[in-house]
Image 1: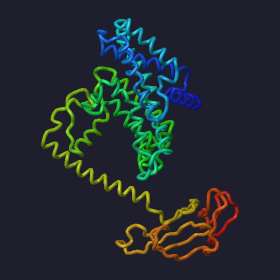
Image 2: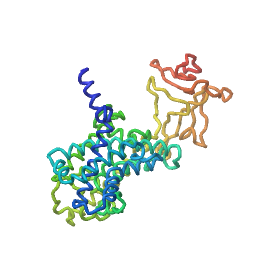
Image 3: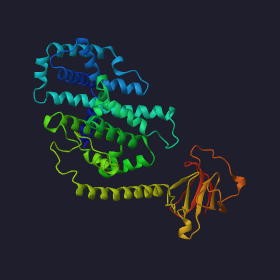
Image 4: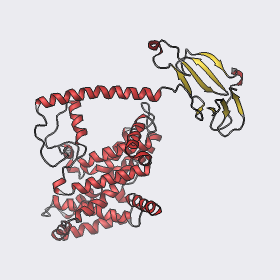
Length: 417
């Protein structure tokens, strides 16, 4: 068991680049892949060497430029003189010995090794810059509609993972002509999962963590393990697509098909949203399409109903206190708080207040029409808690309800028996 634990730790350290010379090795692989892209785009070296070098520079560091700029940091190539020097040296070798270098990189497995280590860096940076954007937006952003910034950090994660779509500048928006490229798709999915699972303690994050828990239990809910799974997924897909036969493999195609059907948008020709490198015959047959549209219309209604039910379930107070459960100041339990008019019952809540427990006739402690039914003490005892935890109520194993000023306090302010 100890050996297995050590092996697991070493695998985690490897995936998170916590090993000697990891940044340098990943940097060399990243520069080499950028040089290969340039040589394939200009095989006859018709460009001026300065143009060629700048093109390689942007092919290599597009994401390392745009990502830091979006979070207010210095672009990666400017942070260390070694980066520009190493890029110049490797570019010169590829430019002068282009045929030899392309022959070497065409050896079986060589390109896959370069893709592996360059992707190792990119996958970690997608998670890192999503977190950086989240922290900055928590300070400077506007959160009127949701307690945390949702979309901004995900967009930064996409740019950090697929900023090369728009660089060099002559590409313009051509990278989006046939739909969202796979590099952007995987960055979108992974940054979304990472951001919601790790940074969102509310409803959307709870849904994602619940899904992860159903697949991997408590192990897959820990942030370090979520990041490891994301990195492994990045590595597997990018290395797989580096083989020509599997270049169009896309596990996300069902998601995009659902989006096309639900929105009624036309699927662009040449889209790579397919799971196997073979044409799909009869996908848009009229009869089949109508049947699928009907299914998806029903699915949309069920989705809305399930989300509404989930929202109600997460916001509906409990109607009892199990022994040992702690109810903090301001929290409450309630009976018949949901649709009392239709259920022909009276809504009643019990609230932990400052120095007392109070029972009201109403839907909640913030209900303006609530009426006090009972309280453990009068309003004259209402006072702020001395402890940092605040006033707390709990039910003992003997069935005694007690009220204390802080969890660690030995003095009981009130008890039911």
